[in-house]
Image (cartoon, rainbow, N blue to C red; front, top):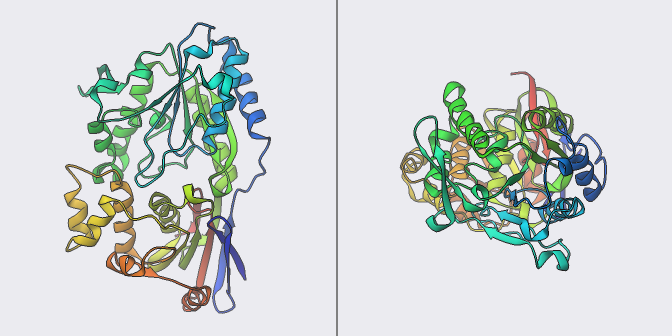
Length: 408
């Protein structure tokens, strides 16, 4: 018997009497080391590879805190960073919080909600709109000759302090540490290029081209100090790393693996995954991330069951999968003008092509059927499906989980 948590407070008991449970992966594997505010202060005061942040800035600096969408407990993290800056004698009037657009279908979060009112009156909050040319500034030409347009809050700042959400290696759509800056705060054309089916499927030298392009923008912008938040269960804050980009990159890889990597003996016939957390975690984008983990440990033509509380209507790209004659046709049509949720749609299409996909969710069963996704509406139905297989794997907190298979 395995227990899988999903949603805000839901869980399902999975009976493995007739099916061998190969692994039950429910992270994080390490305990949260410190309260959030204390952890953020500590890494800013003792960063990796650099002296304390207070020694890297001056009171008159114009500082832009660039907050990537999806950062766990973003408002509390931003408040802790602002408090550290103000305690380091930085003028609050010189602090800007730059907020990225929410993921497709997601609700915008207020990253300044936890900042005390006396400071909030003096801090500037800027929303990034990739289609608003007036809010963009030319940085330079890239190595390949492409013009680089970024939000003016970045190019006008004396110090840019990116705060990003850490990911496992080679996560689709993520091209390195400076993804928190580019294409997150770039123009719409650059963002579209990075969410195209070609970018999602990039491997080897092709993928390295995207990674190098992102790293180049970080260098051109002069990013010398960066912050990465490692998510915990349900997308909550777990740990934070700060310092020089190269040192942070190495530390994040080690800490992320310690927290979220699980070893399983072999691929399974059925993989049951959960998406834990409140409404902000119950998104189509997280369904796609959960599928990334599941596809690493399910056999071809096996079955993946996603347990979640997703209720939101799908975005334009996912809807196009329903309308097209085939998923391959829909994906090809996204090449030139990929919608905001193209990454999610391509991951869904590829999963459905390889495995049988089922969702336990709050979505309309007829809509799921149009996508060639089965709808599971009870624990009993889920257990009957699992009992058809010889072996299975359970992945809790699947959007964060990394799986390594011993025998492919």
